[in-house]
Each structure stands twice: as structure tokens, then as C-alpha cells.
Image (tube, rainbow over all chains, first blue to last red; front, side, top):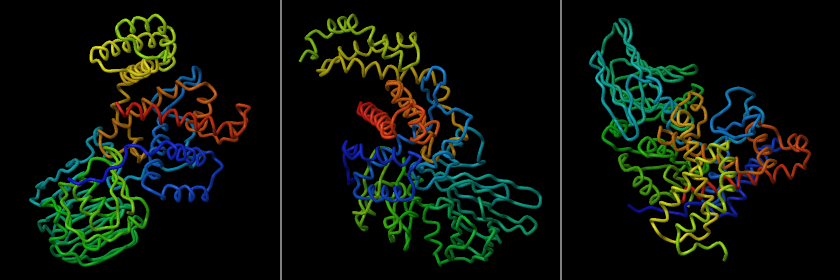
Length: 322
Length: 176
């Protein structure tokens, strides 16, 4: 498998500079201008970005420490009270995480979803009424069936639903900010997109998509993207084969933004995939990718696009412009 | 170089024990927050050194090496002591956003945090204090300067030093 490698760490001088930036940005005395300058600084090269990420990760990891006020001894873990550090400093945000939402953290603790899948895993589930839900990787759903309704909550990830008709018990899928009402149908709901957008694509008949700010009837062969605020972001034709490709381990990108493609791959890729800069994220992709081979798929993308894939560590892959 | 390794590693180890024992225990006690813990860490460090001697190979700066072995033994000691925390998943982590996407990554992050806590305890008092006041308690540099009676640029230097120390020890540890 071809792979573009670079040294594990950025050179020390660059790393020192990146640390100086982080320290200054968190001095309590810096504003938008410095932040913008830092964004420019890190954009200069892959090595700059790598140095910036290392410094940010250090700063971010140190958030989870506390200090015994009497002995001065520093220990891991947060102190549970006191004013929020964020509120005081309004400092840098941590690493941006492509794809997968925060729900995955809680996974190990509570029975969060009735059905869920892990990294690179897909599963098809037959629901009590014979309807079928197919879960893409890193997905969780809750099922709530009652005499007068069939309700599924999509907690994270992407799922494809094949719904049996039952007029007395409407079938709906809820996610954070939208509800999709099935009208005897098959459709896909994807909440693994960047910016917490949600995509609904229909492969049979129709569904009604409702949010705070939109209500639309979506038909077979259509895909709509609903933004986080509930507004309709886009609506375009999409073939059923494209919608359901992930079920056979493929991802078909037709004029898809790169960050959307990366979000889809990240459910199969151990670790973060981070695209550096809006120009890179907005690149249009036309490709058929193998979800089961995420690293090879990234390399394939790098052949056709003006990008470079840097494997900074086991957990971090950075995509920059070539 | 007075610091190179003698031919007989075991002799050297005994030597080190005699000459550096007190210093190593003080160092380790600082890292784990107590004399008893320090003794235990140093014992474990000796065991590691003895194991290393059997594997052979050159060690270039034996004294520095002994201290870095003690540091690693302190990581393990601290991990053991914070075992429950290390494996616990809090809902609060859900808003950290940077923590990664699966339990393996979460554990990996916890281990990094743990190592950071240990190495921050190595820092001189003022440097550590400036870092804690800014990073953990969220005070601006200006206010820290006033509190500690030093200049704002000194505060910045202290925090830089703390971060660079963290980076260097984390890189060292990653290289193993």
C-alpha cells in the first residue's frame, strides 16, 4: 500500500514556535487577529500543521489535571468544581474531529443504543414488525415501538431503513433536529456529516422530512441535506445505488465535498482524519472508494486530487493541499 | 566523559545505587507526591535497570538514563494508583471533543494525561505555579504576574518552559 510518510514529529524549532503561539493565544490578552495569524502560520506547510497539532494536543490534554491546593501536587483528572476554565479564557478549541460524534464516548458506560456498531462494522437488524434497519459503521439506534407508533432514534452514524407499511402505526426516524416520517418506503439517514448536517436519501416511495424550519416531501431518487439549524441546505437527485453503496462496503462520491467523504471514511478508519483548511475541505470528489480499505482509499484520493496525505501518528492523519 | 557506562553494568548499578539513591528517591518522591511512593518507584526503576543490563547494548548517559527510567517507573506507579480513573468513562468527556472516537483512543488520551501530570511535578515551583494558574485555573498572564510578583514576559517564559518540558518528555516516551 503506497503511503506518504513524514517524520513522526515536526522539527524542534517549529514545535517551539507552535508552543509559543498556543501560550500567547491563551494569555487572556489575545484576540481574533492573533488567532487569524496563527491559522496563517500553521497553514504554511504540513510540518507547521503537525507542530500546531502537537502543541494543541498537549495544551488540551493538560486540561484534565488538577492541583492539590495544599501540597501543590499535580494529579490526573479534573477537579469537579470551580469556574470553567473555558469561560475565563475562551481559549483555543481542541482538535477538530472529522466525523464521529461525541456519543461514542459514552458507549462503554451505559446502554445507550438498543443496537450499535463499532469501527468498520455494519449490521442489519430485523425490527419487531419485520422492517429492517441496516447500520453503517459507528452507528447507534434506539427503537421505540408502541401500539400507535414505530419510532427509531438515530443517535449517531448512518442507517438505512426498509419499512413495512402499517397505516395504524406510522414509522419515523428521529435525529437531533429532524424527524423523518416514512410513507411505506426505504430511505437512508446519515448524521455523520461535517457541521452536524443530516442527509436523508430516499430509494423507494416517499418520506416527509420535518425540522424546526423546514418540511418537505422527498421522493425516490432524491437526497436532501438539512443543516444544524434545521434549514434545507441542498436537495438533489441521487441514484438508489449510490445511496446504498455503503451496504456493500463502497462509497460513491459524485461531486461530493472532500470533508463529507472523509467523514464517511472515518467510521472505518482508526483515528482522526483531519483536513487542513476550507479550500481542501471543499474540494469536489468523484470517486468510488472501498470503505474496508480506508487508508488505501485516502491514497487513491491523493492521486486524483491536489492533496497530500500525512500520517502523523497512529491516530492522526492530516490532509493538506499538495 | 565521566558519565559513560562502565564495562560491568551490575557494578555500575550498585555504584549508582550508592551514589544516586537519595537523589533518585527525592526525584521520584516529587513525581508521585510522597516519600513512600518515591522509594517504591526507585526500587522498580532498579529492577528495570537490571533487566536492561541483561539485554545488553550501550547506554550513553547512564545517569540521565537512570532518571528517565525512574520517570517511567513513576508513570507506572501513578497509572496503578489512578487505575479507576484511567479506565472510567465520564459523560463530561463527551464535550471534550478532542478525546478521540473510541475507547482505545480514550485510554490512550488518559495515559497521556497521566504522564503529563507526572512530568509537570518535575518543574521548579514558580514555573509549575504559573502553568497551573493559567492552564488549570484560567487566570490571564497579567494577573499571574501580579500574584507572583514577576513580569508578564516571565510568566510567558515559565509557561513556555513547562510546555516544552512536557513535549520533550512525551516525545521521549513515545520513542520507546
